[in-house]
Length: 92
Image (cartoon, rainbow, N blue to C red; front, top):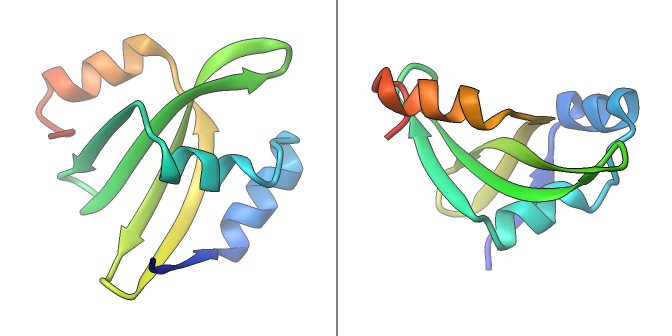
């Protein structure tokens, strides 16, 4: 398996948003939805997880160069935003 690296930006977001440290790996290893962001040229993975006492879509943005999986950021995302990004063609 490829090495998984948390960027400094991701670590900061985890701390600021009070997201459990293991969530990015949980999402990466068992996503419910996967996309490619045409605009940013990065991979997206989404999984429903408990966050702020609710079950929410949690999204990670990552890059995979074949040897290293670098997780760039994480945040909750609404179903509406997911639908809009697919409909606009931004996410494939």
